[in-house]
Structures are given as structure tokens and as C-alpha cells.
Image (tube, rainbow, N blue to C red):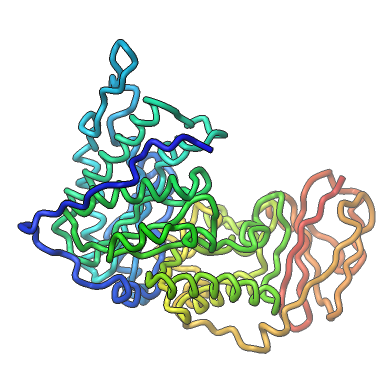
Length: 459
């Protein structure tokens, strides 16, 4: 077991002269948050603009116009905070002499974050400051990471993280109750339950000095996805009356990340698929009710249909979910959350990413996915029930590939690894002996207009 240095006990000393800002209870706030979206890959990049265009006020205008009510804003602070290597935190006898006062967050960066937050709040949105990209901190506890630290080095990392949260808490203390703080993003991949509890407790103490009633979002350690909030200790929940629990949901990963080479599950929506979601969400609901703490589903989503690249306008080299499955997944997860009293913020990282909902280049949306999230979907029961799969064998292949389905196939398309159409006869037997080795995408169009895709490996 790792040595835990972060203090678990801390006094929540709050000056009564500080104006009480957030008056909504956590339950009231979650009800208000409703349907939301993530501003992914923008401020969470090393520097804004690295992974997606810099955000403009028009983004929040478009979000509100469609009917979303919350924006989660993932943010990274390490590139804008005094580096550990710039601080002397030990003396000649290797005693720790550091403190959080050794670290400063760049005021210009805080100004930018505040501008973005104000844009969201001014449009009537609930906004979440999510400390998202600072894996350097939570991976300090991970023995398998290059960031792993012990002794004085870990103490310094903890002080640096305290400094970041002190800067956030002080800068945003006068904002309305519609601004929420989220302490850490997915720490459970690196930290144990007790370690996450300790950090949450300590940072809450810092936040509460200037934000006594602001709602704060937390998760647990060690177990991920729907099991993460269940790891939060009862004592932590009882210590603060303005907490919201969160979890992320990308189950089954082989479907939600099927644009990656190692996955090829393009189909979702069977009774078993839905039953798994219901079982997981009911477990979270029961925990939530038992502990009287409401829940935010902070992230969920599935890759672009056929792994679509919205920048180059081609399917991805390794395929991806069929479109109906992708839409159905977003629809079902969103309604599963809301029907249990959870709010949600779906994951969107823009058109340069493998999970696209909003396209900033022309201020447009992937309409069917957006509508599914907003409860405006047009999927009929007949469409859902008629979803079909097909078998592709042998796979891998060096010669003739057979395609088999229990429904009538009208067309079969073969795509190269660059996503470009490769002409082949529309036959249930495809001769691939003349093709170069690599990964291809076979797209089947059924007589009823449905489509489905599978990866084909040619040796």
C-alpha cells in the first residue's frame, strides 16, 4: 500500500463575514443542471489552441440556443503554475521546507479562465470548473507512472495542487451559485480510495474558506466508471452538505472506442446492452439515495460513426460505430441518467477529435447525436428493433471473404485504410487477394436502408 501523506483531517474554518454565495442545495442544483455538454480539448490542452480552436463567446450562444443547460469546462493548470523544478523545498539535511505559497498560478491565465466562465454564466448556463488535465498530480500516487513521487517530492506536489485550488477558490469566490467546482478528473486510474478521500477533504477545506456553500463535485478512487462514486467514504459525505458525486460512463469500451485499431464492436442496442446500463445506473442510484448525495454523469459518449474524421471528411482507417448505434447509445444513456434524477454533461471534444458533437468551424452540430441528447431524437421503435449485424469471415483473410446476414443485403462497400472507397462488386463473396495487407472497412447496406460496418484485416 502506498504511503499516504495528504492529511485527511482538516478544520473547515469559515469567516462569517464572507457573503454566502451558493444557496441551492446539491439536489436543487443537479435538477437545474439537466442536460449538459463538455467543452472538451480546449482549456484542457497543454495550451489553449493545441487540440482545438480557442473558445469564443459564440460557442455558449450556440449551446444555449439548442437547449443545453450546463457546460462542463475541463481545464489544465500545470503549464501556467510555478513548476516543481523552480522551487527549493528541501534544506541541506533533506528536511521539507516547502509550502503552497511557493507556487503561483499565472494571473493572465486566470483572467482567461474567468472570461470563459463569465461567458457561460452570462448566458444562464450552469458552468463547471473541472481541474481536468493535471495528471501530473494524481499520477504522483501511481507507482507505474513517470510522475510517481514519494517523500518530499510528493509533499511538494501536494502543495502545488493546493496552490492551484487556492487560486481558483479566491478568484471565483464572488461568482454566482451557477458556478460549480470539480476537484479532480478521473483520479481513480492512479489513486486509491483513501488517497482520493484525503485529497478531496483537504481541497474542500481550502475551497470552503472563500466559498462556504458553493456546490463541489467529487468522485472516489481506485474503481472507475459507475463504481467510482461508490468509493467515497461516508465520513467525507457527512462532513459537507454541498457535495455532488460524479462518474463517467464509456461502457462497453470496445464499442464506445471502436474507431481505435484494437476494437471492432460497431453495434450497440440489444436488450443485454441496455440491461447492463440499467444495472449499473441503478447501483449508483441506490448508493445516491442511501447517502443522500445527488449525481452528475460527467462524461459519456461513443466514437464518431465509422470513425468519421470531420476535418478531412473521410471515415477513419479502423471504422467505428454504425450511426444508428451511436445515436441510440447517446439517447439511451442520457435518458437513463435523467430518469434516475442524475444530470449529465456528454463528452464532446470538437471536430478534430474522435467524439464530435459540435463543429466550431461552421458552428454546426452532428444533428442526430445532439437531438438524442436533448430528447429530440427521431429513432422509431421499428428502427431500433430492426438493427442488424452481419458476419465477416474468414477475418483476417488473404483470399475470398464471405459476408453473411439474416437480412437482405442491397450493397456492400469496401474502404481503404484512408477511408476512401475501393470499388468491388456488390457480392456476398469478396475477393481481396489483390489488395495490400492492412486494415479495411466493409460497409453493408441492407435492403431496408440500414447500414453496418466491420473491420477487415487482410494479411
